Image (cartoon, rainbow, N blue to C red; front, side, top):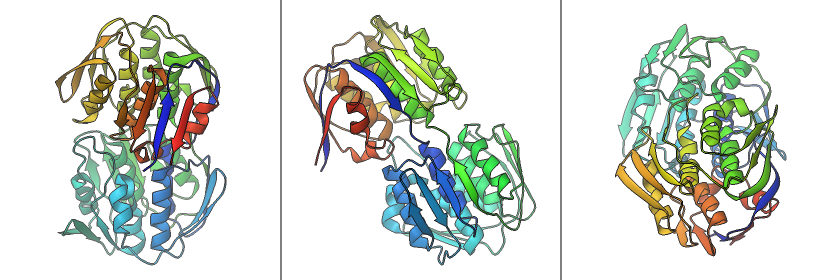
Length: 417
């Protein structure tokens, strides 16, 4: 099994470029299945999750041409609604393929999806949504079968805000007969990006990026070219890296307005941040201040940026409270930080108290999930001594060739095969 070996304590400086948004890429690939015409997706990140979803649509019969930072998808000849079990088990986002495949084929068969273990992430809400479109759902041996001769528009209220749920139902509604109304919808930037492109291809979507989205079903979706927005979670993660280990780190090709709440808290903690039109410059902070944070759906403080920010707070002088109500196991990674010397107290599954500053010591640890994994990489970069991080497949799921990019900033990190 591959692992990262990191020698910590080096000051980093230079420029690092943000890749295309992981979550935007996954949803764009799924939406491409709606069309019988080719889609070209640029600024495409080739990470483990996007590689898996491309393999899944190829297994269904689509053709995929991979470029350096782009893919061309032609889903005209999709021939089956049966999804590959092994791939579905590895990728939670495989559920987003169910809607467009159902619209095209009238039937979907797939294994319960996998992904990060950060708490309960049931698919019931998705299946209930498909039923509201008129589909029938049958469970059997960890698989579900969804069938529908013709999807019909529906009114769906989300009991809790869900990004993937909003995107999945929006994509599903595009070819459904009649009007669909999504209420209490998520507002993340990836949603209006996808809706705007679908509209250019012939869809009729209104209100994407607001709590209420209306979709008027159409009979056909055309092709076109879509440039993905930059990954806001990657941008925020690099900002924490600059604050902790940097002299001066410039984060290029990002959208600062997409992480406005996060940047406000970073500055509140005493980090010097300068925003440009498509870049952020961060200076290393010598005297970090404690702050209390509560994660929230967009445009609030993103739960995916909580792990690296919690690491930042281990270096602040004083006590901070971190409250992440979205996933009940997201804070479990703090045990690994404590093994490295942090002083973090688990109050309950959603809240921890962080006492700092703490000197971190390199250790042998394993990445429990995607966002915790990249946080442990950052911890290794500021720790004294050598850190070995195993299970780096989880990190590769969201960060493309991360060790090569960090080396350009001066980090001492290598991948051991």
